[in-house]
Length: 292
Length: 114
Image 1 (spheres, each protein chain N blue to C red):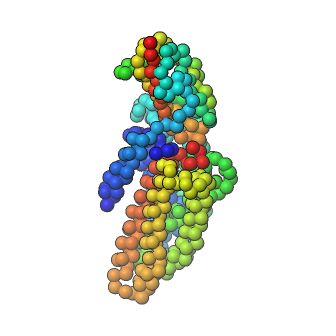
Image 2 (cartoon, each protein chain N blue to C red):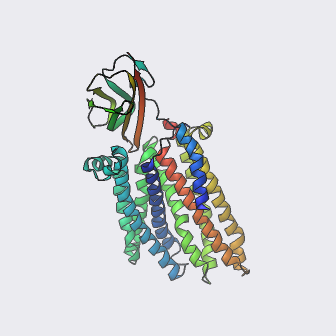
Image 3 (cartoon, chains in turn purple, red):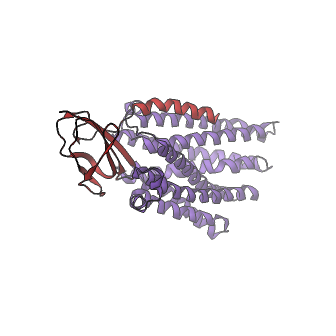
């Protein structure tokens, strides 16, 4: 397999920590975005859930960010876990692009904590969400050429993914309330555009980093990406089924429709977990074909 | 379901790990070479690499080596063995960080013949 780095215990730990960091960042950004997009439509309890979710995720994100510094220091040190607290190794990590990204992400996740403060806090949290998205353009192969194009695509990819991922739990709650159908219906319309942007940005990134279709089948990066896309396709299938079948069935007050929709959203969450693990694996231990 | 998936993933990844090897940079001695003497150990990289830890091992023992290149990112790393290498097989392992922040590691092996 070309372009696959060895996976030892620390690398596996780094992948899991990164996946949790991705999930926390998406939920934090997404909770804020949801409370903006649905400020007038969703019930107070649903909006509160979205904001609490954003704050909880931001706190987890900050903790994971600190842990990832230690894990990376340990990995580069060759000393095992002892390297995690070695000042020199931590200094090397801080000087690397991860340090720059950590400033953006740390600032962004701190700013998201203000989402619980009415009005001004909401706007600060929105700026924080943008900072978190920008943090992802500061590391790894996003630093290649054409850098500005890659950065814009990644930020767009992250924000649209966050809108979706951050909406799942609030929507699952909204389904229980009488006004929920309108929120779900509106989400279906917003998501249609969001998903189109998400897929376009993802495809463009994959194209820029792969260079050719043949590279997808012969490299670890390509196979990992195909695996990720396969789960995304399943996720899209569920989302489409919800929009076209289950939400109209709820509107028609068909028995069992609400239960079916809530279960379907739970499956979507599971798919998101798999996608994040796949993404963390791809970005940790494989090399994009254009860099091989 | 998650458990089954993770198990499946582990099974799928296992052969990839087994087949994985670090991209071969130019090294001295060359990977797999048989040489009669080793006056220096060196590696060249396309992009500056911060080499953090290096070890040279004979069958079981670590051989002491002295780094000529410091911890600064470099495209050429050099070190010298502190003792003459006796005939046998050797393996050089390194860990470090690429300029984009990715942790990197690699190794090369060579044989010293009489």
